[in-house]
Image (cartoon, rainbow, N blue to C red; front, side, top):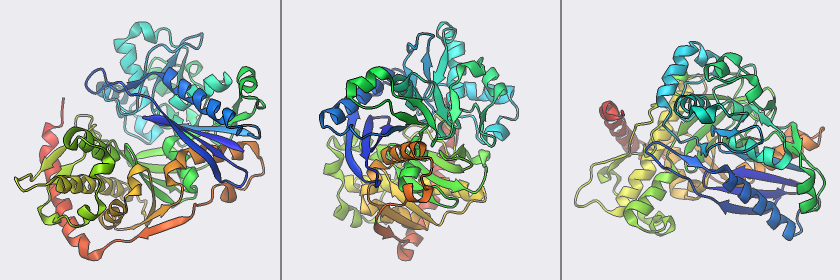
Length: 486
């Protein structure tokens, strides 16, 4: 059996997978996000470790750890965890959706003129490198004490194994990786005042990267099992969904939104803020459009406007009866936006509210606005010469058949919903552990696609009205761009 950990933004998910690839157990452990100032987003790494220990304690008490052979870890990307020489955390981790370092992005691109060619990406405040430049300039005392810079999931690895490792998919999101050649780039590190000594050793996601510490093995009465390299959250979810070969694609409808597609080689489209990263498996890469607010828009609406639970406002029947032609238009930029705007100051908007607008009309507009943002991201991918013909959909928002249907028509491609989509990242981490432990494991067998539950096809009758509204969405976004600034 194999344990897969998915270190998310709102909580940790622990998955236990058997030898046949079936999920035997899955459980969530929540922790908070801190937003002490505008554009800031931080977490306390000790909260992650407490959740991790609780997950293993629960598996141990349920007597589910006895036959575990390996541990895989996936998780939120881009976060900066700073450790001192004694392994102490120097400050709260700065997260992927933190926008404070936007000026540092400009400075880094000026220092390293060919950074886009090296990394395949624009410098964005969400990435790790500009965060470190911000710390160097604003918190010099902390910067001077840095011994290691780790990504969130790799901090959990350190706590579990005492080892400093990262892997290619997560490292590609730091802006310190030569993405095509899969190696740390000294020039990019030096531009942030860092050297190779500050970085963890790089491995592939399916490689062994440390062993469980003796004290923890004794505590949970298991062998000193190996840890796999693991993956960034989206690459991990792709492995869990069986998205491992060129041309396979998925759409993640979680807190943020992502279109992820395995590319045949290293490709890029920096001008439209398309992400170009390594996959979690050797000699594989992927393209990714990223939208900072997706299902979180629905959560915001439930909390701030409807003042109730999401489950109480999500009315599938009511949504199907909305007069779309009269519904408002929604820009879903509640936390800024990456693809294609690369603008930390973009904000959300409703346009077209009247005295007749109902709560269900506004909810429809939110679902549609998120779908339109995905359409912008899909266009950036296609402009890179990478067509997408069908998408496996996962994430909390994917539970809605109405939203899946809407996405199929807006994106003009088939949308596939499979069993286990809610735990794809944890399952992917467990699969990577199996690949790391079993040298002769067959990739296609371990990373097979899950059972297909439903297929959603574009509705040609609906598309004409939707494309008319997409034109309005695009015009509104363009008109407001001058106001998306500090």
